[in-house]
Length: 314
Image (cartoon, rainbow, N blue to C red; front, top):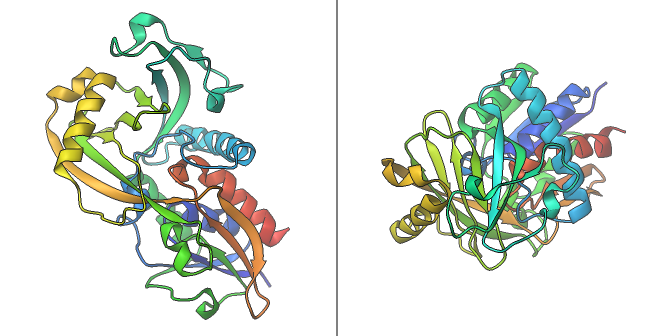
């Protein structure tokens, strides 16, 4: 008889783990306090970029594996998933970023390819976009089609859950279900503007500067961002939106001429290192913790999901 697994969390981390477990033969149910389209993952700009996650070696492995999977999904025309060019820009003259080293298709940007005179270096890299509305809806449809029941409710203890095993992927709320005091909210705000002609994802992620990025999608453009540690407020801040749009106009001048469509806030699950490990509940049942992905949930999801599956089923 196949193993029954309860997955806690219905963001991208929980849903990809659920799907990989089902593909390996497990019977899966999902319990979450929020379901798509109301998860933190739904707020994400959702382009491939390892951000605010560790440890370095594991993040590289998880992110590279996830990039391969997203490329496969894009070529299979999965809703919301597309291959894109990315451009990382820097105000300092820097060498190739560590996160891009050894990645095929990376090249140094010429001066006339940089979007603003303030930038002195840039690197093009192969990326992917997972527009979270259609993509997470597709994931929900896939796990349901394979028999998963999905229940929306707040879980107060992992011990209260049924199943032969548990996958704990509750994101920023993980601290309320464990004694882990290292998980903290990293508040991120994004602003949506009208669609751009350019399809290139542009990101400025440099020490001493707040991260900013422009992510063109089919019907809008996501502009970010912010990274405010230990902030739980999910109300959009108008002054911050103004600052984000000013920064993003340096990344893509088209942004300044597009109508503002709205702003959203998500709470990234920040932790010094992703917690992906096998443990046991008081009654002896196995639990795999899979949380603390910072700003890289989309980027790490498939690599982590495959490790979760190996830990539970191998």
